[in-house]
Length: 640
Image (spheres, rainbow, N blue to C red):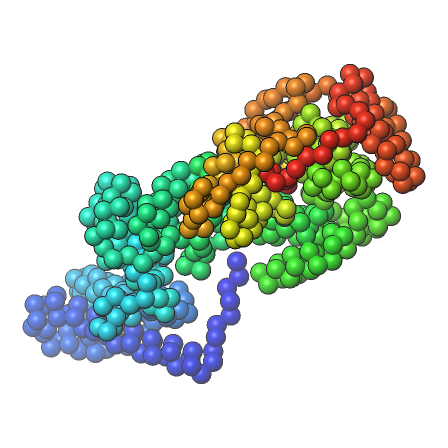
């Protein structure tokens, strides 16, 4: 990384001149005290003359060394342990240079410089130069007497690790933030009763109820990015019972491209307390294949597409081509990334991914090396009413992009799929299942492009998801509607899902269907109750929960694998590979061609029949069903 040019404004110049002047005095003092201590306070006259003759040389050598090591490019108030290492190195190097120079040259007829003086000078230079800087930082960071009494919100931080330390330091350094730390909570017994940056560790999580009774606390901050949802839920519940506000730092997936800081604090959300362990991966390592590459993302303005664009840009792709047919969505992600400093790499394109002419122009112009195909129509009831669009966009659009990727030498192609493609019972599910078959067929041949599909279930916070539906119902005073008391679903956050998509794409061999590990299933009833609790209400009392019954085509428990699929592990524990007998490529091609012909006619019934026929093609087992497709509800489900 290149260093920023020095700021030579009058104010900056005056500040550096003041630093150099102080260091000059400290170097002179260290050199004089070295003589003083060497001779026990009684310096002989000849050594006084030696000091006077050589002090200028010592000052020039040491200050030149300090300048070379960029001592004067930052303020003393920000001195860190890394700066201390630089001070030690500079003191040692400058002392060696002084020794070398004075051993070869002595002005006039002065006596040789004693070795004890050189040793004392090294120690004293290190002490005074380093001590002055840390003293300035200590004085500046110490609150004024008027602030020694609590001011602002009194907060208790749960977590005395790196994240907690960072928050604590930021709060104490910047009193304008309005936080006054009154204690820390940490489960490490070795930290009990210790003080971290002057703030006492008051106990473990088990002691939290007692601490909240004994100490006045306005807010509890969860500073444990790797904490499980169950741990967060326990803290939130204790805070709710005590009537204390609880905020949190985001989890590891959200922090993967950001720094810990007070600005990241937010209210605890339902995804924080679902009870599933966060995915922990060496993201920088697994995403290296994107560094310096040209990446194309379809559906860039959607929930998954936006996060893909954010993470791809942060990783260090050379160019990011963002394709979406919705102008406003594309505008928003383009502006968001430009504000983050990625303007030079962005190519926003308004286009429909099933428009072969438009997409061919994009591929020919931009020459993408990696393609993430996130564009899809996903709402089950809408696709039942509009099967032409479901088939054209989800199935035929995937085939169009796969063809273009092979023609233009794309290295990797990843389809974002869904659990609805498993044993499909709806038009949307069948269209995505056929898209998966397109990917599998590409891998069965000798394609130079490594194709993969990544299948996962419910994504928290995606557009049209269960969270805003429940939230709207809660804001209206209820009832919150759940289709079945025992219905379960797997859940994953958008950042977490995208990280695993990027990881899976990196290990694709060709034609792979990857299924992401979704953790333990969550009862929709539990999800509704937790959302009500997080809103400050009591489930069943303040806000009613109404069971409305399962709708046609809706599953009680989610599936991630087809009955004919064999599941094998990959070298990444959170990703599994599903394999099954391949479709006959000629039958698949004929099925897609027939679908395209019927889409052009504009009549939905023949298209639905052709869709199921294409899914049966090459297997002949009658799977998937025929005829009219039952409507299903997305009230309790989320889609990628």
